[in-house]
Image 1 (cartoon, one colour):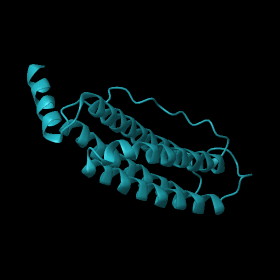
Image 2 (tube, rainbow, N blue to C red):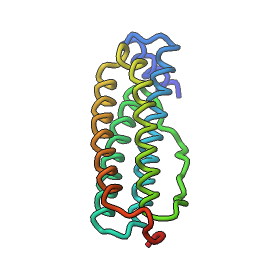
Image 3 (tube, rainbow, N blue to C red):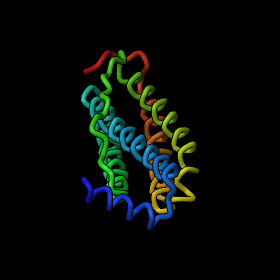
Image 4 (cartoon, rainbow, N blue to C red):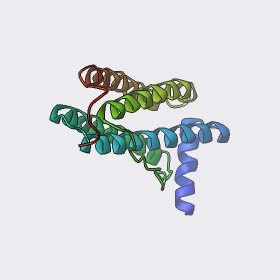
Length: 163
């Protein structure tokens, strides 16, 4: 434990953090890590229920990208000498059909994009590399939203329930 504290202290000094700034950055990173893991779980779960194989494949691709985002954020957390969050709350799909799955996925992506824009200022001045990572993730999120909108446009809101 003492060694971990020394490593954290070293990073804090190296990066010029004050205790309150470091805590804010770690809170942002932990939150983003959890959200990315949740997105990956959500996309995999929704993919299992998709009737159309191209939508299934698309959601599985999005899930893989979200996992990569979580891994990169997790590496940043570890670089700061901290542990990854132990618990990731699970999403249980309850939407009535694939169109609703996609709609809720799009809403969730939009919500996270807003959160990310709120979070970026806390990182930009203190950890420009991590801020750059989150900006790349935001760019991927824009692409994800476009993909989901495309799937929504090609699906039928009156379709049958989960396959």
